[in-house]
Length: 263
Image 1 (cartoon, one colour):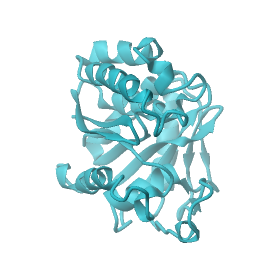
Image 2 (cartoon, rainbow, N blue to C red):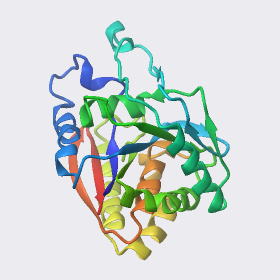
Image 3 (cartoon, rainbow, N blue to C red):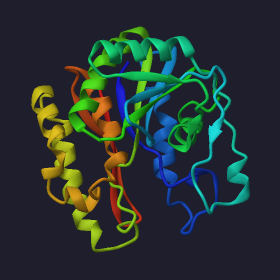
Image 4 (tube, rainbow, N blue to C red):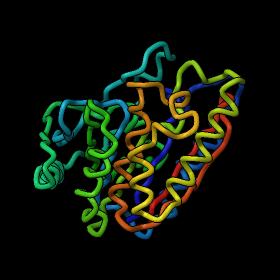
């Protein structure tokens, strides 16, 4: 299986009216097309979302995970969206073990559900909700090296038909969306990020570890708020020696947003 870093949009944006209309159509089309690019049907999906942070890594262990509607101010019907994919407690426990073996303490949360960084994009990627899903948290310290290492620990799952998705946003500065002055800044950071992802794997890891030194890095992800970029580190780590490439990019709300595939 390849690994991906995908954008999950703004709250439940794909399932509501937006002004201007069509703002999220191309992104939705990209997400809907992912399954058709896979070598086979995944046996399970592991999603790392920018919306779950814990001191140490954690995994959803619920057999039928509920949904966490962790957005506010949206139309009432968006709080009735459903994504009844089964969990996979055995896979969650195995991943916790793999992380532990790599020196990264991890636990299984038996109550936690899927946040919108999981269920919103998956409603487009796998709309039937018929493949088991496990969510992996970020670590609250947002250490890029630790998240690359976590991805490395999960790399073997790819050979077992497990699809690993990092779900976030390549640009995530709430003050920047819709502000024209951020357009060139986001584009310059995206150029750097693309070059980093597409570099040889050893160089790629070094660049991503030091991402905060990139041009306009902190305009794109303010200090302490880079949780929407860190899922990329897990996806890149899980890719091992597989090459990375940009597979989607467009300007949305005056900022450049991109997705990347490894392998």
